[in-house]
Amino acid sequence: MAEGSPATTFADYQRAVARAQKRHPEWRRGQTHFNVLHRLRRDLAEAVWANPLDPFSQDERLDAFLGYIEEHW
Image 1 (cartoon, rainbow, N blue to C red):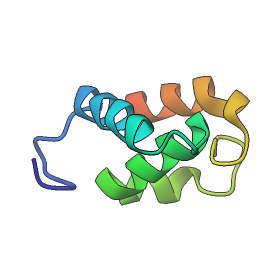
Image 2: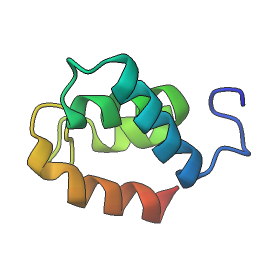
Image 3: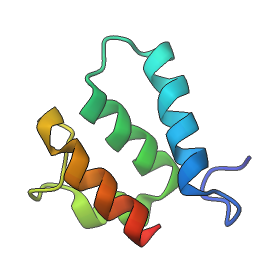
Image 4: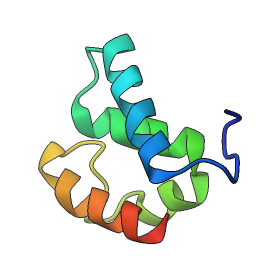
């Protein structure tokens, strides 16, 4: 599936996160989620970047981040 393809779904995103976490075990979960989101849906990544939903540096933000991402997918 092409990056940013209209056929990309939230479930596709979750599968891509799981694959990326296996490839990059040194990344924290929040880093993985944000990096994959940036690759698949740059618009959503930019919407949460550097605000209280951004999980890149703080994994404890993942629940709120995922709720927002799923809602706005």
